[in-house]
Length: 405
Image (cartoon, rainbow, N blue to C red; front, side, top):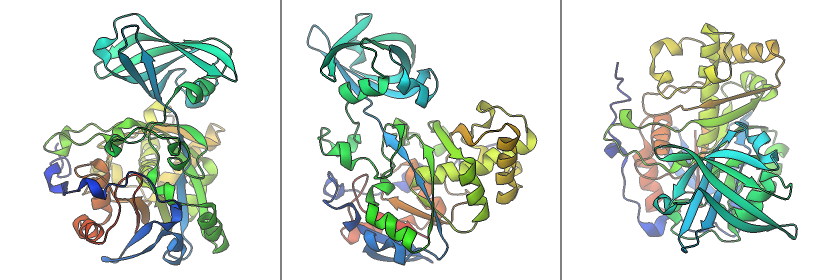
């Protein structure tokens, strides 16, 4: 059965975004960016470093602590042609933590730029780590249409994390139309980033400084972290006429048991920092629903599928009961952390179960992120975006911020 949400025309989520409104670089001080406020349908503005003045009392802020990896690897063929290998997801081992610890070989699912020029079985590149020359090899194992499984191997006994740091380039968003600069290595990470794995930053968090975080704590606002590794699909525009034809990317999520418990205790007060935190938190509800019918589910069986929220049968539990199902599951298996993945799409027609407020930047026209914002503000996104465009707000990853309540 095709739902009303699946029939949404993406053209209804188009708007004119002049190139000069896209922030090519961040402001010198992160928290000096503008902050759009959307409260009870009213739009106003402030400055980001004053965000604590506008948060509802008792709010629990949820941050995504993922760290962007230097996922873009460039190889030069003998002919001079350049091949780009872009690491998307770990394949062997199929675990972020383990793959970064590998010291000789590993496999990733990758995108390949200039793929037609890759004729030889193996590409080579000389790099230097701690003053030692290292040969990095890339070999095609299998192709899956747009993506490919690539086996990397290297000598010297260094970890793959060290190899990426030495050889890789930080993948800043394609719409910035510029090369990665040295400054991006710092400015395109949140100050609280910890867990390596994303190919794009959770950009709502880029505005937070140690000073703003300290003020949150001083004013008694709660703070928790979770992990969603952002995939390249976050930049993938919706190309189908209706969103039914758009396939969401599946992303790794990891949430500590203590965080889930605290979310359950603070339902009604949850403020998500960024759309990645929103997707993770809302996915928790549907993981709890899956456990209600299959308490013995494996990690793979708990992956939230794209259209799961739009089936009425999947919306009958209370959020507290859904979260309790996860807590019981973790306790039963003596796990301290829930690790799975989500493909959730949040679009108009979606009923928010956990998130009551969102801190977020301004998103691309015809994007799934704009659909999420529209769902949250009950279709009032044009009012917000017209205000931002009319009041000199800077857009996209390095742009200004908003607090939607």
